Image 1 (cartoon, rainbow, N blue to C red):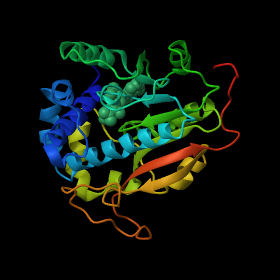
Image 2: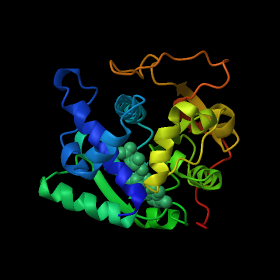
Image 3: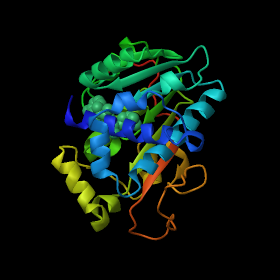
Image 4: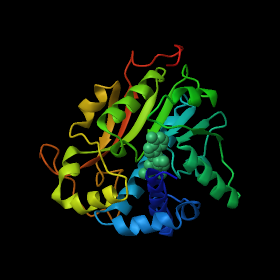
Length: 284
Ligand code: SAM
């Protein structure tokens, strides 16, 4: 697998630890330990300072809730996990009958995930399609070949990806999503602040990521403006530690938004702005 794909195992390791909290767990992912081992646990151990394990639990639960809420209103039946990694929502959430989940990631990651899930005899609870593609290239045709219908609304889940992209690549991903978003489409994404990419407090962490070949490259201090300029109107912007996005082990208090400079990360729900999508037009 490419270096960046091992970060999916690290994320799964955090989910395994959360699951093993039993009654106190924010979610249960019974597949996470097998999907993570052993490299994910090594990476998590190396990088676990700064509330990272709790943050991954918070983000997972926030996005689980996003899937449930979005599908509950009946209009959206396509969910695309953009850079799905070792995400197991297709196997562990309840889904309406007509829903389809598309899991987009690099080919080697998807092959490794398939191998491990087969060993667990895991069965998806929804129609699930793997989409082996590199998000840096034109990947929409591959998504459409798998059955995605750009004339119908979609929920895009972009979890744990944006900071690994250059600003241009991040831009490209959001614009690509917009170009295939029928009216009523939604986006859920996590972003970090520019300040986090410069902070002395996260320097060791960032050096470790660089040494692993997975540097964090992109952040924004104005997520609302950033997304709106790219065709997405935020409907919920939340920091870890805020209501509905917190955890007993989260170590930080939320800083007032008007304070400039603290490191931040955001969990965001957004809807596509009218005129953004190109439903029915030809693919690039
Ligand atoms: N969303 C998953 C989750 O939260 O469990 C995975 C997050 S993991 C931190 C980052 C994922 O991004 C990896 O699975 C990696 O393979 C994928 N990724 C990074 N760059 C990619 C690219 N250019 N094309 C496709 N997938 C990519």
